[in-house]
Length: 259
Image 1 (cartoon, helix red, strand yellow):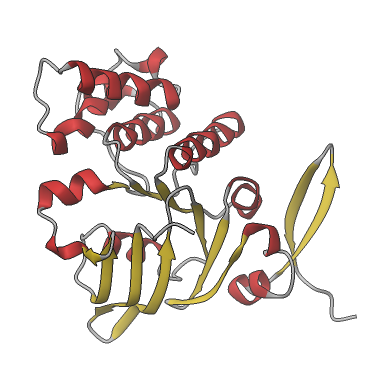
Image 2: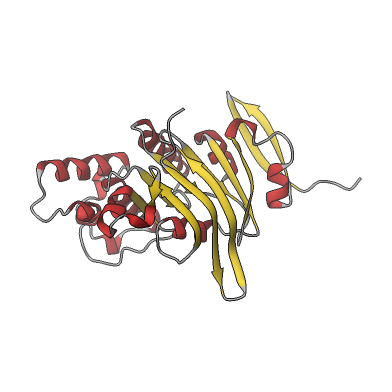
């Protein structure tokens, strides 16, 4: 088994008297797409922000065997790409230029070099953005803007992609496309940690599931085993039923009857 890209040891985030993330430990390896699941307020977004270096934290985060904090800001920006939940793009820049901002950690400046232009073109295509490329980002719909911001994160070509609800504003076709995109990132040796509330999409497109509740990691298990036992029920407080249809496993939450 390959050495982990990222090792998180007892990560804790405090905000006054609150502890939104408490004593979380896990590893990510190249080639993995890992879903971070849990109810609202479980600490998922705060955990991603801590991994991205955006909030103070306790504990240790190692990158390729050395403390992540030792990397320069530029090196960290090249290693870890962060896609925020509901990210804004209010600038009246063409979508293509917004995506090109993902090359800033590499020192790219207009006109883009061949390698930078190729990275931008790949990110545009992977996120299905070319039809939007020349439109001002400020005029795009929420779903269109989400695709542009995903492309910007992909253009970094980081070895770790942290994505917070990347498919939340998308129609079903583009939700499936996002899962294909992140699988492609993993296939080239990178790792993806994504937050989602779509349990079915996570089980379909991810290798592992991390489950959080009340700031703590309560389960780390293969996606194929997520419907076994009571891990999902403990995380969400409801049961989950599954069925097979046309070769796909369909998952739906349900409230257990007391009868």
